[in-house]
Length: 191
Image (cartoon, rainbow, N blue to C red):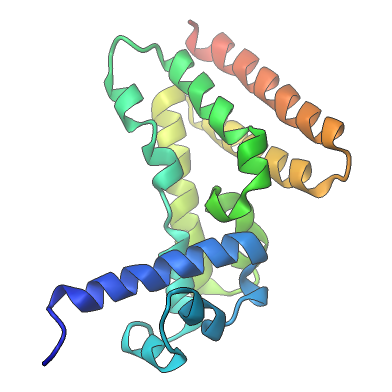
């Protein structure tokens, strides 16, 4: 008796979810196919029924838009000002929770060092995610340059906040970047 038709897709999703979580937590180079498949509750041999290479899996796993999708309902509500939505994004993104949980955080932060090392296919997936994030931010802020600056500041702030060994400094970096971004956004889009 075979598996139902949806089984293969469900298995693929499990593999992608495991890869995404492990890579964000440990980095691409520190996670093997065996690690991913074990985390997904599968055997190594089953990997090649779904992906031709680790790089192909990375390209799919990198396209994680869940962090951005959380704000779609807020953006869709015309009674919520854009600046309030932006503040909500910053409250979540530039938080101790995001800093302290890389496996559940933004792939732009976790995978930036790996993407450029992995070559064209992986960089293309990372680029697609960066463009998507920038477009979402630009839609909110109404300014492409400001959206690029905000995205870069947010990603950089989390990277630096994770890297320092002084918790007070780490939190101050997150708070200061949020304040600076709110000031820039308020000057551009108002209340």
